[in-house]
Length: 65
Image (cartoon, rainbow, N blue to C red; front, top):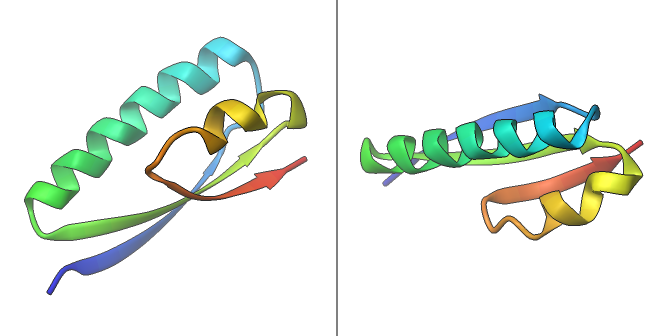
């Protein structure tokens, strides 16, 4: 049985920052999964970048500003 860890990312800023953070989060997600953890990831994002975050299969919920 996997342990669930909940993470809230508050990164509503520029597109470049969002893309870089998404790469870091995806790496952490896969590394945690290898060690028996499931990450339940939620993200606070500006409306103009929300579609990018919603396309990621690892993001559970997207809160739009």
